[in-house]
Image 1 (cartoon, each protein chain N blue to C red):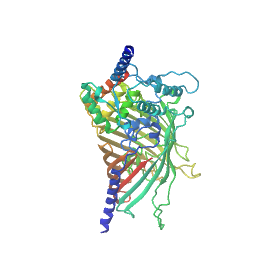
Image 2: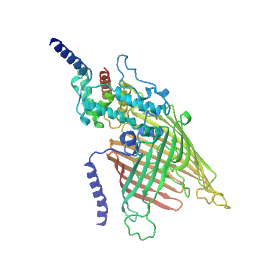
Image 3: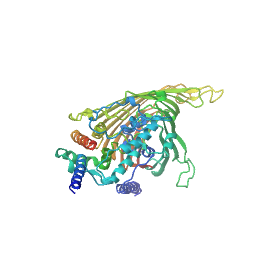
Image 4: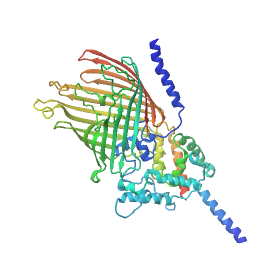
Length: 497
Length: 120
């Protein structure tokens, strides 16, 4: 009887939730980038926060919308020019030459914005429609904002948004088998100043932590809230008029192809990015205080390298990343050249991205952190490769990493190697319904674990998603000689505003 | 009197010819669309495809405004023949757009025609 109730309650809750969501009215996604650029969430996301290729381009472009901040010399017209007797539809903003002091580019844009309205071709539409069109035109790309704000470089709209997670988790081995929890509330900020400096930050206003042990907690609301900076950095775009961007602050060093939240699942990170070895807290997607230089070369090659500051130690850690993209939109969001007059080919729809990375570091207790004590340090490295393959509705992600830690327990030198791999297939059932199946293998020298993670993500409104996911984890902890066998189901709702 | 009639006929004909050169727009807001009445017969099947397939993700208002202003209303990027082709390729590759290459090509050709007409 107890079992029946335990299993039926989540099903009833899920059904009720889905019914509500199916009949929810329409709404617009409004987080920071959407507000600033006046675009839909789906411009950059499949189902948020997973990025599509345009989101990747936006990220690599330092949070400047596609086509903006380009050097004029880099723009080459590909289409045949308009015939001589035809009146141009509208002058592109960058083509207007305006002389004067101050920010010449910005003045060009401001004045071009006014000229665009004046030069807009007369149409047969009703005056009201024409006015709407012109208003839309001025608003597009933020050209219509006040000159004072624009010249100051301050974003016209406060560039912040919030993301919240609510989960229901079923774990037969937990004390609280069905745990309904308000998981997190995160503040996000991001954008750019005059297209010269990009910035991004996340601040955890609340994350639910495991309850304190042995305390008779009679409250239904955990008191162990946590406030912390996830990431906070600025990017000097095209430093000194070079293609190089300089990123500084706390961020996830560019190692793998996907940032930590760039996936369908809300609870299961890729093992290749998240695994740790013994006492060492290092993992690939860990935000760290760092300086990084990165650049896009020939539109399809991305390179990054950086140095990480290890706290309380006079050592620095180093990393490099390279990725190349074949097919699909390039890293500047330019569409590939496809001849529309030819028959369909597999290559028209195929996008392949391959990336590789390496990280070298040292952590542990140094003489500086513990004066007089002998250093107990762990020298380690990670080397990994990722593949992202997209063909029509199918997406395949492959990820693998090998690692070496000289002394992960910081007690004696006992080098261990780790081997972790993940493969995930994703299928777009509908534009707002995506399913995936992931398999992970993790041998971190202490455990050998296999995970099977099916996920179904539904996006009834662009800024709200419902994810049902299940994780079956099985393996063996061969230092403690215990079996690993976990089965965890999660139904989560994430929304951004 | 004859002079006034001649002038009126002249003005009427002038206005009429301008109206014919550009595709008429009907409706307002989200219901705004091009009128198929002024379209040559050869473009009407493409127009039907555009009306059915494109509104799966956005209103026709967006397309009309882009043609009228020469700028994509959401992004503010120029909307010319080069952009039309790029949008076509983007839609071809977009998962679940449900458009094949021939349909994309037909709609691109249609939009190029409307752009040309609008520029007259």
